[in-house]
Each structure stands twice: as C-alpha cells, then as structure tokens.
Length: 212
Image (cartoon, rainbow, N blue to C red; front, side):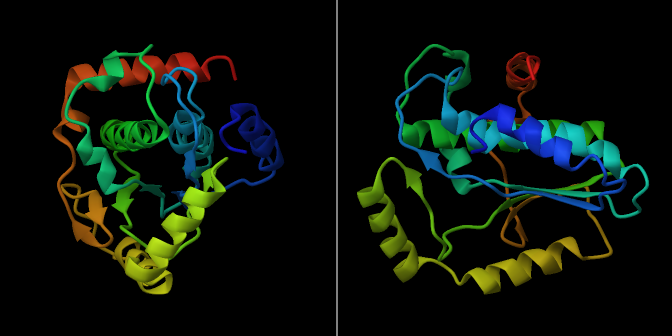
C-alpha cells in the first residue's frame, strides 16, 4: 500500500542495513478509483509522492557507488495536461485526471532532480502500452476490461523490458536526453520545464513529506 506514505517509512527501516545502492527503479503504480483533490489523493501518493520519498532517502546510499542510476516510470499521459491544473489545489478530479497529474508531477520532479544531482544518471521512461496486469483499485470490472485491451494491443513485457535494460546499460550517457518512449528519446510536456510550476511542485512536495 504505497499510497499510505507511512508504510514507506516502515519499508525504509528494513533497508537500513544496506550500505550501497547502484540502481533505483521507481516502478510501482496504478490507478485508485477516487474523486479527490491533489492534497488528499491516493493516486498522487502512490504514483508520485511515494517515489519521491523513497528517492530522497535512498540516494544517500549512492555515495559509494560508481553506477548511480535512477529510473522513473512515467507515462505519455503526462503530456495531456496543458494548463496549470496544479494551482487548483482544492479542485476535485476524477481518478484518471489524478493519474495524469501524478505522472506530470513525477516527470517534472525528474527534471529538477537531474539539475540537482549531476553525478546521477536519470532515466524517465514511458513504457507505453504493455501486456501487464494494470489494476484499478475498487473497480474490478474496469480493471478486467483494461487488461483485455492491454492483452490484445499491448507490447510484450519481455521485449519492452529488454529494450529498457539495454538503454540503461549503455556506457555513454547523453545528459540532453533523459525522457524516453521505451528506448527512444522523446519530448516532455513543456510544463515540466516551467520554473514557476517547478517551484509550486517543490513546495507542495516538501509540505506533504514534512510530516514523515
């Protein structure tokens, strides 16, 4: 239950004995059936805040690593937000909109982190439609329909995984590119580069994680 941020704190306690981390993959995610604002949203907790909290705590263990790589699994849906929706902090959104916002936040944070952590290689990846079990919590019927769709139209999980592994194992790292459609460089939503938006997001993130 990564949407409950207190569970992540407990999980981190179990990792205290680990002295070094080479690679951090932020992959867990999904859609929780809810109507909420971003301040109380479980979708935002699951797909954004949980990853950022883990990243903040675990990058400290990169110190003794020569590899130092972070992977964020994003989505093309982050490009479907074309307004400063984030500024409407008390507005109620449906689950799908909250999911899109969470991926926008995650991609934006990866931009910020890339500037802060020069030594760490950061890959933000849109894996596209893949044949995996995509679960919408509290909505079994819609989950089944989506999984049938992904089974028919989704890319093979093994093929996509191998392409991503090949990408992150490359000896050369071009700082110019860090957002990929599987293994191909791609453009991000221009909102992710907006400094005002970045500042608002950092303020929100700091506030949400300050009580942990």
